[in-house]
Image (cartoon, rainbow, N blue to C red; front, side):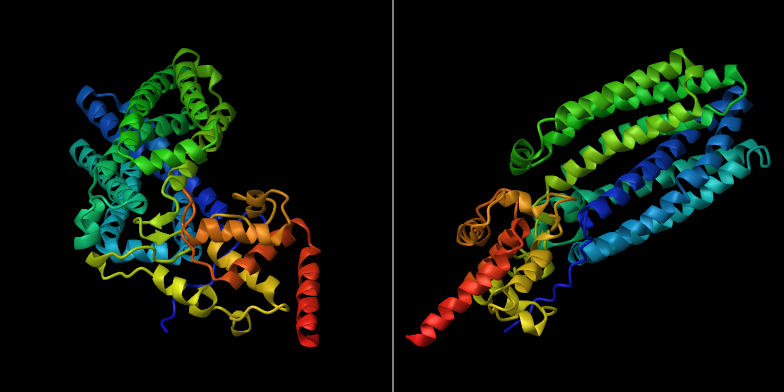
Length: 466
């Protein structure tokens, strides 16, 4: 019998591994999008500065560039590896699928990222130290290299939701997996919103300017970029939605909370108000006000958007073939990949997992609770917290129910058949479903495990007496 090499799942008690990844990724989005938007903004400002002889714009590039070196390129370079580490241990097969499909794309992105990091140093520190033509070329290289990194990463992110072309499943090849309508819709939308982020973060820089006239001028320029990015990004958001498949819209209608859409509209409106304040009352935009606006952008803007994007690709974590629990859910002939669902269906999870402890491969009255916990951790913890806090606490999905047979019936009906909108198909064996049911019931009532064991022992004794 073949074994399935699922790595032991990393689970962070209290909040769950999903929220750890989400926290790091959301903060990184702010850093990365701001750096790309600022690089394009620098390219435009440098062109105007040299063509119209406005050296004060170069001074702004230098000040904003120095701020970015810490804000985006140091902190961003910490959260970037943080994403790699957390996603690798939380979703090893998801990351493996991306590497197997796009290893050379990622290598290319790293080359452009090196150019970007070197470029921002050169653009910032060589203001006034090299001739205008050379400095302008460096600024343009920085802008183009930054945008290229964004293009490559977004193509990979789009694949995580679904491959660019349906033919990828049968033919493989990174071009079919990378390029799709959603890739370009997402790129266009994020391009617009990156100027909004650049404007909000840039207001932290302008708040420290002593020259009030120059401060007001740069606030107006940033505000115009921010208003344009917010309005255009909001419009492009509808294009992006139209590139999502029908089932993604079904998930959004059924799984996203009612407040989600109003909250996004509210943050867009709040950003427009903030940009208008930057134009009309630049003195009111102090360092603390600007910093608060940046934090609000992360909490009320980026976090809900990232959560929604992660939600609509469920039950998959990558390419519509790797489940969130790391099982391979479908055949991908183009990549030589076989579904593991038939193997699990035939032999069960306990018998097919390489890293399952030997003492848990057979369910007994003594180990049934441990088996339930092991299976729940492996199959559920990537999307659900196993405590009362964190991401989608698993106990909430059975309410206060402690009826083990009823929970077992629900698990068999929903997971074994795959008749759910959001969760993967997990063909549980009868004893596996009972073990998980006991574990879930025990979360609501810690006496359930002892009671269940006593009942099983009583039944066994009765059988022996007969």
